Length: 111
Length: 114
Image (tube, rainbow over all chains, first blue to last red; front, side, top):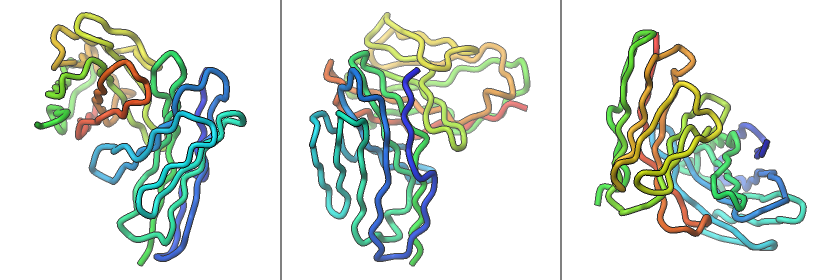
């Protein structure tokens, strides 16, 4: 059974705080690691896809790193804003091709 | 270009009723997926398809059926609705054979079985 674990399950921060959360995944047969941002009442939207060990991706104040050897990825948000409030999902793909999603980290940013 | 569309947006079913959740994409994507989302559980894959005429089971296929007669459409069928199928259902699609291509999600169908 392929298991993707995200921590923490939820996070409450103040506007301006920087924050990070973790995605753990099986390190064998790794193909890609996806991060999605999912706002309430909307559908998930892709943030990053990473495939190589040591990959770092950045989009504005959000960045992600990847360690395929130990099976984890970090998502960082610098200077959180209320509009960053969402659930952040990671998903692992092995060579079988299906995305296996974690349960998500729910971020709430208070003004 | 509408992307991935799903109908209906909301539905309430009685136990034992059947229904079909519709999913259509206009991006000419070969790969399509059905997920269900339960609180605190992330997204669980129900069924997926790698092209017209080809479907396969995901993690939680029991109680569901799918078909893929065209590239555009991937309907999900519930034959005998049960309260355990109360959930939000998302359809998604992606292009190509590269598994790092992002998936595009539809807006979801919220189903309640009473």
